[in-house]
Length: 341
Image 1 (cartoon, rainbow, N blue to C red):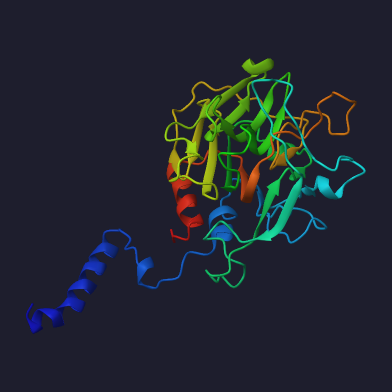
Image 2: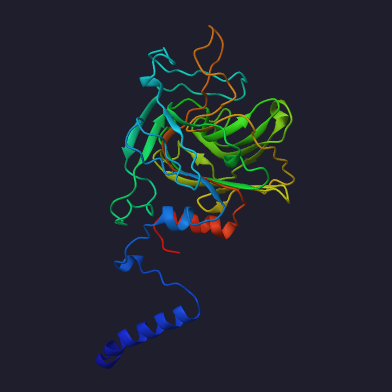
């Protein structure tokens, strides 16, 4: 390469950048020392006019509420069974199986760990916006967040649910359903939930699942969207425990369409028609499921809630009263990973 051409390289590169900017294309400079996008909470979630609830789950202990940062907040309460012996008198918080033998619930000690390293790269400690200082999150194993019922967080027609999670169980854990969030009733079946569902007879194989109540009874009372292949495969060395996922669910009321997204991409077919009847009585649980089951203690031999414990970290749970478009879902995933819009 001639000396004159080498000298012209900076000018040529500058011209390419200018053209890309003119035609509206972005140039990824994250590998050139540019700071990561660090305002996920403010400019991605709270700036959306449809957001009705947003729990970062960044608290440092259960002595304070699980704060909802959206307008007109609905704060939750951290329920740590290990520290509530008057309510949960067993030393082992083994929640056993669900009443339905086809819907299994695993045992869990009822533990929670606060101020864990954040799993959302674009969510920095405010107001510093330091990409090296992520907002912390919680890790649960039988503990959960209880948000009392409010119609606002159970939108009547269209909605979007989203959460960032890290899976901390492995292929040796009991096969079970593990709820990220659950706000349902049973018989009649209403509300919604996000689940990691174990495949029957295949240890370590899970699929993400969105569930909505259609007002019916029994298993027919719920409509389900299941992620397609490849599944979350905990016995595959390429998909170990400890992986972070961005899960989003949209329901468009006018078209009766339910869609499940994993890491910003639609996973599985659109479910249409999918009838949705909002929950009108039960609380929202984050990190556990079955808010329709009476809480422990129960009589001997009677199953008590909660059930379906998630095992891992959870951060930035949000509810919107609109079905966000697929490009918006993808933007949230990118911003959560530290990429500027």
